[in-house]
Image (cartoon, rainbow, N blue to C red):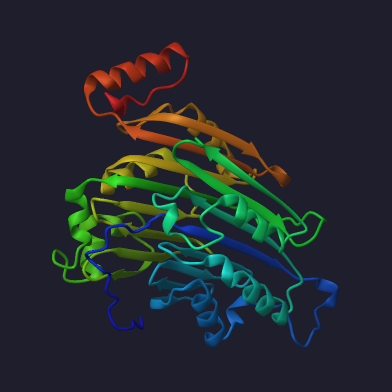
Length: 365
C-alpha cells in the first residue's frame, strides 16, 4: 500500500470541522452508442493525473491507497475517495471545497463514454460554519451550485433547523428517471466522543495506523474486509475497508475533545443493523449521534421500520425521526439519538416511549 510522507495536523488548532461533505455519483451510458471495439466505459480507467486534479480542486490529497479488481480506495488528507466502474464517492472534511471538483469529474466521465448520471450530496450541519468557503457555509447556496449540473434535483433538510440537522440533495442529468443498482447505505455521524476511547487515535498512544485499527476494535467490525488505514500526526485517523463486489466501509476520527467527531459509513447489507450500530457505538461512545439509512425495496427495506420503532438503542434515546420516500421505491430514514446520562433519565425515556406504544430496547436500563 503506497503512502506519502506523514500528514501533520496543527495541534494548536482551536477549531476543526470533522463533519464531512459527501458526494456520490452513479454514471450511466447509452448502450446503443457504445462501440463493440471500445467496450463499456469504466471509471477505473481514470488517469492518476485526473484523479489528483479532482482532489486538488477540492483542496485535499492522497495519503494512502488500496485497490482490488472492482474498486479503487484512497485515504485523503481530509477523508476518502472510492471509485468503481460506474460509481464515485468523494468524502471530504475540514475546509475542503468538494463542489469545485464536480465540473472536471463529470467532464472526465463523459470523455470515457458515460452519458448520464445520478448525483447525491449530503452533509451534517457544521459545528463551525463560519470556517467554510462559499458555497459550503449555506445549504441553499450549495443547492444553487448542484442545480447547475442537474436537470431535476431536490434538496432536503432533516432534523432541527435550530439544532443538529442533515442536508441531503438528489439530482440527475436527465429528466427521464434513471434506475440505479439496488443497494443501501448506512451512515453514523457521532459527536462528543469518550476521551478515553479517543486516546488510541493519537500518534503518542499508537505506534501505527494498524495498531490503532486493532486496539480500537475497528478491525473486528468486518474481519474479512481488507482495511487500509492512516494515523495522522499528532492525532486523527482514517480507514477504508473493501469487501466483496462493490462493498466498502469508511471511518474518520477527529479525536480532539473540543470538537471530537467520528463518521462511519458502509453499503454492506446486514440482517440486523441495530445490533451492528450498537457495536460501532461501543467503540466510540459518543454523547449523541445521527444515523441515516438509505435503501431501495430490497431485503434491507424492513430496516426503515425497525429504526422508526427504535425509540431507544443501546443506552441512547431518540430525539428526532424523519422518513422520506424517493423515486423507484427508495426510502431515507433519519434518526438522532442522545446518550441517557443516568438511570432516572433512562426510566423517563422508557415511560414516554411505552406511553406512545413504541418499542423499547431492553439494553437501555
